[in-house]
Amino acid sequence: MIDCLIRYYRCPERYLQLARREALPATSSYFQFGPGTTCYGSYCGPQPAQVATGHLHDALRDVVIDDGTTYLPFDPSQVVDNLCREVYAGDWRQGSSSALAAMYYFLRPALSVGVRRRLQRFHLRGWDKVSFPRWPVDCSVDNLLQQLMLLSLRAAGVERIPFIWFWPDGASSCAIMTHDVETKVGTNFCPTLMDIDDSFGMKASFQIIPEERYGVSPEFLQLIRQRGFEVVVHDLNHDGHLYRNREQFLERAARINSYGKQYGAEGFRAGVLYRKQVWYEALKFSYDMSVPNVAHLDPQRGGCCTVMPYFLGDILEIPVTTIQDYTLFNILNDYSINLWKQQIDIIMAGHGIMSFIVHPDYIMKPRELAVYKALLEHLAHLRRERAVWLTTPGEVNRWWRQRAEMTLVENAQGWQIEGPGKERARIAYASEKEGHLVVTAQAPSEQSLSALRIS
Image 1 (cartoon, rainbow, N blue to C red):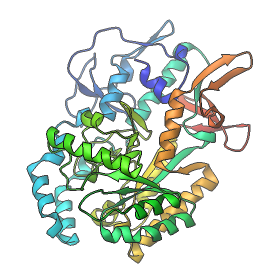
Image 2: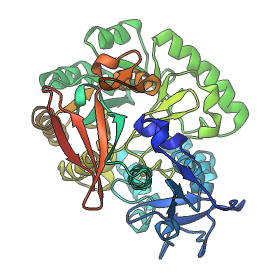
Image 3: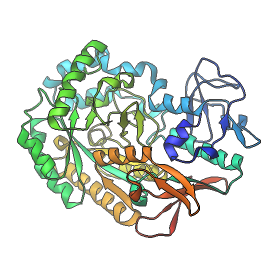
Image 4: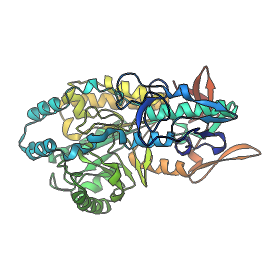
């Protein structure tokens, strides 16, 4: 029951005493665990809900702390796994193999952008009425684990619990920029886009489609790497059929893996953010970037409900936590960074990762390019003023894997971090203040501690 907390916080096991008083039922349902925290899993208690709408029973009412142990009416590791793997999403996991999707992708090459936009808006109608995951960012997993840490503090009767801070050098949060390259025109714009990114001190990854869309030359890949950017494999041919059936997926996955080796790429992203996590073992990549935090405006709805990276077997999932540029411009008709800033504020409150998808194909016009530059300027401001780590997906993958192997060891001098990469890691503490969990972490450029409140 405590595995999910240890993975998230990298804290000593002795402070986490969680248990269940009763066996759990075989069925799963929705319930709450405090405000803003929707859970899905086996629950031993009243009022099971089969849909995430309306009133949900608050499981906090059924928590009992007795003799140093917190007794829960559910298994938090199961709930976290159900949300991160989108188990709750049910039939939406078949979105990429539906007859409607197949027809759309068959006709897509002949459709103008205007026609595609109207079809997409029609398909996505009612998105703003979907109650779960919560728009514009859902932090159910993060809120659940924060609440469990708070309960663990109370049960253990201690003032604070040490853990390994989320980001290197005490950074408050993390931000990555990713560029999905969809057309030949987009590839031609990539050098200019790299110039723009560099002017704001931002390095990014370029997601490259191996087959059919455009030619991928060794010189193009080398240019990306020489300039300090990263290459990620983007689907196989972006036709929307990657997960159509198991046999076809395995055949395509073998070719995708081959391109990964050929390109020297550690990461993968599926076209249109289609995903089927139960098949990921066939993808031989170190990390994936195909799972949205909340997918109301994507063809396959769902969402992982966390603003932190997490492991799916051996693959690190780096979730897409903000709206895509195409969706912002063409579906919402919004040519400002206001929504991005709203999402950034929510993510930073939980010290999570801000993951952006901006296509070179869709920002070449002056209005769109001005919006993108405004976003980059805002991110540069956050780096200067709020110690946000602006980096690349590959660096996030390397850090998160190092952190997952680190441990806290107590000796006569206090707590110390052990493991490769420990020189960049920071010890942090979780404590309670006025009923809220508060975390303190060593600041990036000083030895004092800076208090960062989680509401």
